Image (cartoon, rainbow, N blue to C red):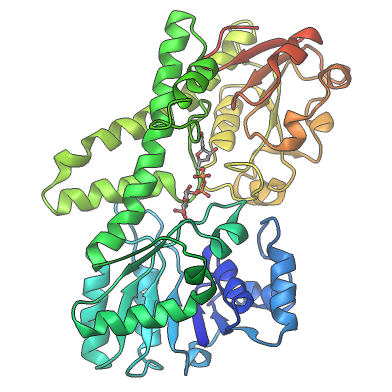
Length: 439
Ligand code: UGA
C-alpha cells in the first residue's frame, strides 16, 4: 500500500520506517527541514535503540522517502497523523494546533476513499470534529483514530509487535471500509492474532488517555507507599515485590523513585483532566490531580534528602547527577525529573555536574545554566554526593569500589531504587533512597 505519515518525530519516524518493514511504500512529511534531511540521510534525529538500523533497512528498499512538502503525500491510501499534542502554555489542556494544521494541509491532497488515521494523543471529541471537517471538504474521505502505545526506548519493538490494535471508526458502512484498510496496513500484525478492538472514535481516544492515566496512577500509588515507608521505616522495594506477586496487581510499573516525566504521562493526565472539566465530568478525574501532586512531591523530597545527606546544607556542596533523560535508553529530556532535581539543587547553592549517556547535548541546549560532563567519573570528581536519577544500565553496573576513588565522600542517593544497595554499602558508601531505610 501507499502510506503517508504526517509528522516525523518520535512516533512518526518510527511508524514510517516500520510501515516499510511491513511491506508498504511510505512517505514521511515534516515541516522541520533539518529533521527531514537527517532522516533522508539515514540518520536518526533522536536516540532510540534499533531505530537507525530499521531506518537504513527501510531506505535501502527504495520504498521510504521523507519530504517537507505535503503534496508528496498525494495518492496515499492511508495518511497517518503523528504530530505532537503538547500541553498548552499556562493551562492543562492539549494544544491541538499541530493536529489541526496537519489536517488542514492534507485537505489539499486528500481524495475520496482515502483514510486519515490519527495516531496522536488527542482529547476525546477531536476525531469526530475532524471527521466533520474532512467529510465536509472531501466527501468520501474518512477519518479513523488508531492510538499508539509505544514506549520510548522500545519504540521499534512496540510498533512492530504491539500488544493490541485499537481502531476508532466512523459509524455505518464507512466504518467497515476504514477497518479493512487499517487491517491491510497491519496485515502481518493482524495475522499473528494480535488482539484488536474496533470501536467508535470516543472510545479509541479514551483508551489512550485512560491507559496512560492508569500507568501514572500506578507509579504514584507506589510512590505514595514510599512516603509512608519513609514515615514507618518500611521498605518500598520489598513492598512492591510482595504486592506485585499478586497477578491482579502485577510488579510492572511499581518502581518507586523519582516518579514519571517525559512528553506523555504528565501532559496526558493534565489534558484528560482539562477535557473532563469541559465535559462537566471533572469530579471523575480529581484523583489525577493527586496523582500529579504525589509525582511532583518526589522531586522536592529528593532535594530534601540530598540536603539531609549533605549535613543540612547544599551551599557550595559538589553534587554529581547521573542521568538527564526522563528515562533510560532515551535522549528525551521533556519534563525530566532528573534535570528538575539538578536545577533545584543548583538554585539552592549546590555545585552540580550532570551526565547522561545520550541526553547531554539536549540537556545543554535546554538547560544552558547547568554544567554537564561526559562521563560519570568526570561528573563525580571530588563530589560530596552522587545522585543516580535515571537508571541507565551504565549506572546500575558502576563498580562502587572503583567509583569511590573519584569522589570526595562516598554518599549515594539512589533516585530510582536501581542500585545494588548491599554492594554500595559494602564499598563504604552511605546509601539513601526514596522509600527505603538508610543503608
Ligand atoms: C508512555 C507509555 O508507557 C506508553 O505506553 C505510551 O505510548 C507513551 O507514554 C505515549 O503516550 O506516547 P513513555 O513516556 O515512553 O511511554 O515512558 P514510560 O516507560 O511510560 O515511563 C514514563 C515515566 O515513568 C518515566 O519517567 C519512568 O522513569 C517513570 N516510571 C516508569 C517510574 O517512575 N516507575 C515505573 O515503575 C515505571
